[in-house]
Length: 517
Ligand code: MN
Image (cartoon, rainbow, N blue to C red; front, side, top):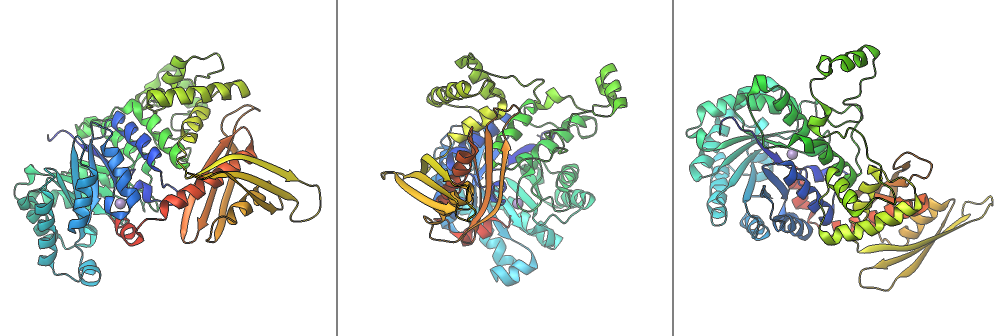
C-alpha cells in the first residue's frame, strides 16, 4: 500500500523510558486501549526480557484482544526472542522487533564483532523468531553513524532472511530533514525487493526536528513512522504522533498519503497520556497544547468570526478539542458519566464503571461542579495498584518556633498485611509526611520537586500534588489528588513508593540497552 503510512506508537516503550514517565500495568492498559481506539497500526508494548514487570505488562497488553498489532522489543539473543513470543502468546496480531547496533564504534567497542558477524547474528535472530512470528521488524541501532554501504548490505540481508519492516533510527536526533529524505531514497533505490518490506523511521527531537525528519523520511519512501503521544521520550523526546499525523492530513495536497488514525481522538489521547504520566504539554504545543487553537489577536478574532479558514488551517473539532467542557454534578446519571469518560479517551469495564460512578457521586457530594480534570483524576486515582495503600492520614501541627513542629501519622497497608501507623516529624505537614516515608524505605530518598495545583477552577477545586524524587539511583514522579491537599501530598508520596517497589526487580543493564533504540 504505497499511499498508506503505518503509525507505530512507542509511547509504552520508548516514551516510558523518559524520566518520570514510568507507568504501572493498569496505566499501560488504559493507554493501550486508548491507542487502539485512536487507530494506530502497531503498539510497541515494551521490552519483555528487560524485567519481570516489563514481561507482565506486555503480556497484559497482548491479552486485551486489540485490533492493533502488538509488538515486543528484543535483542538478538534467543532468550529475548522467546520472552517476546511467550508474552505475546495470545495477541491477535503480533510483531517481533529485533535490534542490534551497526555503527563502527558499536561494532568495535560494544559488540566486538565484525560487519559479517553482526549480519549473521541478525539473520539467525530472524530465522529463530520465524517459529512464532510472520511479522519481524529489524532495527539497525545507531544507523545514523553507520557507513551507508554497510547499511544497505545489512538491510538486504534482513529482506533476504524474511524480515517485514526495516527501521532506521536516528537515536541521537542529529540528522536534518533533507539528509533523512536522501537516506530513505538511497535505501529504496539500492535494496532488492524493497517493495516487499516497509521502511520505518524513528526520530528523536534533540534539535526539535523529529517530526520534520519523519516527514523527510516519508518523502524518501518510509511508510512507517515510530512516534509517541505528546512526543514523550528521553531527553527532548520522540517524534510526536499528533503532529506528524496532522501534517500528513492537513497537507494531503502535498503528501497524498493516508493514516489509519481517527484524528478526533488525538486530543483525548493526549489528555490520557498527560494524566497518566503527570507530564504536561507546553501551552503552545502544536495540535494539543492549551493555546493551539486560541486566537488572541483582535485582527485574528475578527477574521475567524467572518470565516474560520482565514487563520485556521485545521479545525479544533478535527483533532477532538471539545467545543465546551461539560460540567457534571450530583444529578448526573450513569449514562452521562460514562459518555464523558469516553469523550475523555477512557474505556472502562462494567465493573470499573460501577466503581467509578460511586466515587463520582461521592465527589459530586463534596463539590458542586465536577470538571473533566476531576474525572481524569478519578479514573487514574483508582489505578493505584499498590502494593502500598494509604488508608488514613492525620496531621498535628503546633504553632511553635521549632523545626519539628508538625507530626504526620500515616496509616499504611502493604498488600496482604495488616495496616500499620508510620509517623514522622518535620517543620511542616509535607516534610513530616516525607520523613514518615523515609523511615520505611531503606535507600536514600531525595525530594527534587514538589508542586500543588488546583485540578480545575472554583474555590472548591480538588488539589493535585506532584512530587519528583529520587530513591537510590532511580528517579520517580508521583501524583495524588484529593479535596485535601495534605492527603493529596501523602498519596503522591505513596505513589512514588509503589513505583519504586515495581521498579526494583528490573534488570538495569537490559534497560540501558533498550534506551539506545
Ligand atoms: Mn528511541
